[in-house]
Image (cartoon, rainbow, N blue to C red; front, side, top):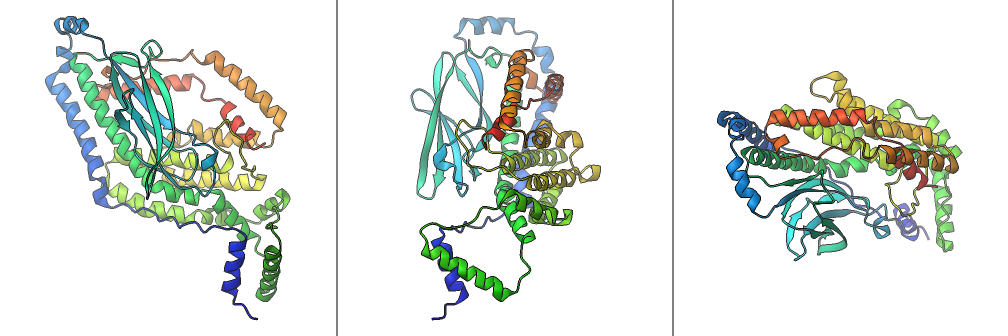
Length: 454
């Protein structure tokens, strides 16, 4: 009995247990999307003008009477809490996972005090990088609850508890003050945080398509094209039919693993044009949307969006090469030398794209070739080391880190340091100087991520 090709191919696919993942639909920006972000930037500039029109620094000196009254009241501490990332556990390690994760903060009474934005993620390690203020006059416990938004409602994933105690955080806790500089700083801090959150939202909109294009699936598809055999169609069809009969007749799918040698041979046949064309859809997407953003956003806001997007590109490149840092085992295999070269070339192509030849519409190299960028390039050094050497180097790095952990420790941001655009700029430059003086990051974390694949 004759069976049409589409029919038996669909049967073979179902027998092998393959899942068709829904296509990622890219989000396209419109000019009106940028209005609110520009409004926040304009409000920040107007608040800075108001600061100097009132001459707040002159009034800040006569606060002795207010301070005396304030000291008689119960002291209240202002904590700045940052939600960075989560490890959702083995249940969500499936590479086909598609989550919409958020974090809710609540106090001891169960009252919600803050909630992050919802982040679309295809991994078990969602990141938010959001900060919140919390005022308390006593020691207290807070709960962070991770939730997944689904069509059926909220799915509880997990929770963590942490204690707020002013004696534990002397460098990042600040007391509320009846001081005009303090309240201007608080206003600036709120505006800057809203601006940062809006930039995150803009980047989040592009994130699903970005991670779809910079992925191991894209790498595999590129290698498959380079390995395509030059045989007649009928012969190829006959081989595929034979494979189908074999797969149906056995209880387990017999898909042979591609050996490293053959993967490297496939990589050697690829040109730079072939490698760049693999991420061509992403570059085309950037061309269309960054044109809209550059025409609609202020130069400062555009630079913030580009910087945020570049950070996500570095994270996506890292996730292709090594698994995220975790205390759980990983089934992710190491890339071959040729595959690693391809991914690093993607990084170079994207760096050149965002630099835009040094044009003012691009980012300067010092903002592109950051510590995270250098860490990715250093992966090449450690990727082929044997396990014992990696463990020895990791121990040495952590010993060095422990010795210098508190040497460069500085006080966290204060409201007074954020009271106008000038102090904000000086505070940022000082933090950058201290970070550079510290000699940059070590190799320990990246080595641990490589060891997860051993």
